[in-house]
Length: 178
Image 1 (cartoon, one colour):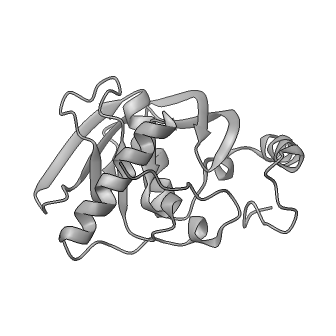
Image 2 (cartoon, rainbow, N blue to C red):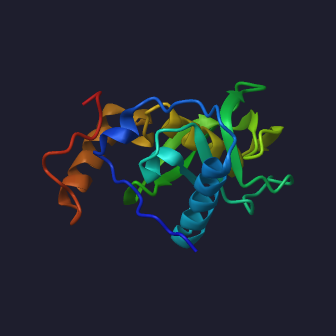
């Protein structure tokens, strides 16, 4: 079992636009396996390749998320669509920002198209937690963290909390928007 360290907020890889996957090869299958094993060990809902320091458009999700009838556990080169304007607001956290949970607005319903590790096209439609997870992980692939989706007061409270965290490095920059 390969459980890799998860990159923490402040690492530049979390702020880069991840590159599309072009080779569906053994290296990609290993990355997907590492993402799934690291996600399982961390007890999270999702994990994107940049969180392992790899700037590729790949994420893993927990197949046990409510609404995941397809039991999809990863998606490559995802493209999200929103079938309606419904919004959900609820707690969200991130494995790259451990111990922090903030109410975050997301779309309630999401359709994601992409590919499997073998290059087969796939689509998953989700609502609630599954939709939130797909949006959160796709944000990682776009260099966006859930803290960027907070209002200014929420960002200020988060920064104060982060600075008090034992793992915080005073030289790191949390958001390009602060």
